[in-house]
Image (cartoon, rainbow, N blue to C red; front, side, top):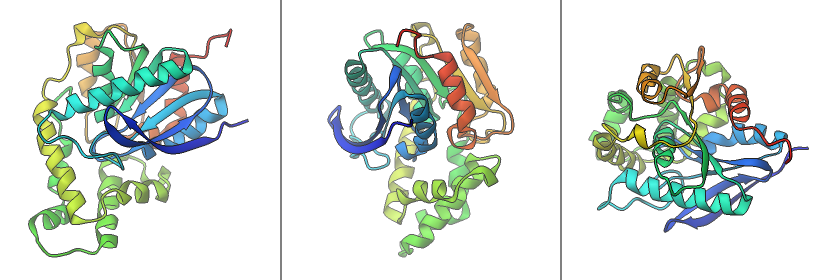
Length: 287
């Protein structure tokens, strides 16, 4: 029987954010989204995990989704690190077990950075298409989009439905290889958080601040938990060739390369992602 998913708002590391959570057994999963995304990106994975009886929690990260805004005077990765650390500690205390921290893109970067923190109750890290391994191309791809250039360069009001439609189209084009496999509600949910010029400008401003921080965000020798690396071989935003940095530095890493998949395997190949996560960090036989 599937566990019900609950959605609520809570304060984590000083931010008021949104949480999607399912109850269950085994090492709990903390799920982190990517740039401009939200916890909603994990709904299909959470649905599948709920049928296996596995506990998991997804959160909106600072400045994204419905979470409160980031501090303009502090580093973005630092603020994300603080929230991830607080969420990891809370989830471990509630579950009574150490946590698997998994994340896509920017969230994948955050999961690897969490694995460097010796004070966190983590059993494993599972970065999925992580940012921060090679110079990212995703921001330039976004900036070159004709509609976004119009939005950013014009002071004229643009109706929210038009903005949402354009954002959904760009997301579909850049993030996925097999767009036929993506339910329409996935696109509309993503676009719901970027529905006017002000929100688009704010996100692009965060992106510009974030790029320098992603140039060298890891200290691999400090990673002290097992790592599962998942990537799509058709990722146009963060090429899977960046995997070499992790595999060379952490040769015991388990690597799952998903054929015919783009930047968001949790949406394009959720069954493969769930199978990889559960095989990597299974529920103990005594649970």
